[in-house]
Amino acid sequence: MFTQVPQPLAYAESLMTQFAKLARAPDGPALLSAFVRGLTELSGCELAQVYLLDATHTRLGISAECLDGVLRPLEATSPMANYYEEELMQFVLCQNRIVCLEDLSSSLQKTDFLPVVTAPWRSLLCVPLVNQHKSIEGLMLCASQRRNELQGVADSLRLLGSFVVDQLHVLQRLRHPSDLVRSAALGPPSISGYGLIGESTAIRKISSLISKVLHTSYTVLLRGETGTGKEVVARAIHDCGPRRSKAFIVQNCAAFPESLLESELFGYRKGAFTGADRDRVGLFDAANHGTLLLDEIGDMPMQLQAKLLRVLQEGEIRPLGSNETHKIDVRIIAATHRDLAVLVSEGKFREDLYYRLAQFPIELPALRQREGDILDLARHFADKACVFLQREPVRWSKAALNQLSDYAFPGNVRELKGLVERAVLLCEGSELRPEHFSLCNEKTAECSRFNVRKRLEQFERSLLLDCLRKHDGNQTLAARDLGLPRRTLLYRLGRLNINTSEAYQEAKDARSHVVRF
Image (cartoon, rainbow, N blue to C red; front, top):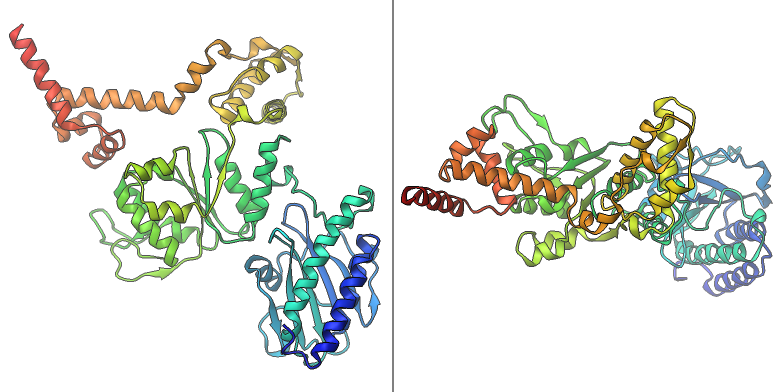
């Protein structure tokens, strides 16, 4: 670690002295002040700064600065200043990498965040601050007006910075909350900061997982029952992350047959197929530098899964009808209500794609598992409904709250939202009462077993089988009767595991039965 330092033993002694001095700091402000002063001594730079992320990891504020041996008072720092959009700082935070620039005059990087001084800044070192859980909480910066070899001290300063971050947590737990360091809320992430409602243990765990994956490029797999808020979590990862200024696009993989889904995702060139009279940009290109949510990934056809795997591995796509590939930079978030591990064992989902998607899985809890959150969510939805309807806020009767608390909500948050909005619409007075809600508490178990998706699948399966029997298993005639393209019919038959030969045999047996009669 000290091989590139001119006097290794003297530097090591100075470094240990700084560790001992920082360990004796009585509070957060004193710790950060001693840290930036120590950085100037160890690096030999005129400037040292510490920047810390807020609870939502969307704002980066300066928390301590030492310039020419003089500490900058914390009160002089504007609480509204946000350095998160600075390209250099964002690169350090998102890539978790040390940046060392030995000649700023020839660098293309903007350094507007550096204070204005008489002589120009020549050297710069920017190091991420990582806690014991390997989560980034900010960065430290050293700058000099002369050419300074800073690479040799980078690793040791990174270790010192990690010690400071962890020590800051210890001091926060020991002192009164009013003495917290401004601009550095390093406690548990704020639930409201990610748009999540509730204070249950389950939802706090989700918030914690979001904060850990927010500034990484990992592929996230959101799993959970229908209506648990998978798209809300995906949008939180996008809106609170470094890609929030770019596009956020959602594609339901069960909404299109294979051929249409492929052209929708990858785009196509003019003449790629019949009807392709112009070039069209796919969703991967449309979401470039942003986020693409692939909802219901478990329903993606096998052939298309192989193409998605290449996108995840190589970061490149080839539109339909094109001979050339090109690079894309898209964060993929996948969501499903199905158990992909079971689909893999059944041969309906690629194992290699499953492990690639499950790089960072997040299991969303059902609403019945979020103890105490139902009433918070209900009040939130009621307030929003009142604003939308332009009416006075409504009160909640104790009986209505008890009724909601006792209900299992098989449709989860989506069902709760619909029930509350309907109740507000039905409520002619100023208080929500049990009669405004249509709940089937006595049939909760039955409702949970037969949710909306399963009922629709049963209806669709029955309709397709009846049509196939009517036309003796002829798929072309059945598709024409249903008003569907034959390719779409084949896709739906495959998704519902309908065997056309069995339908034909049933129709044949039925006819023979009628003749014998």
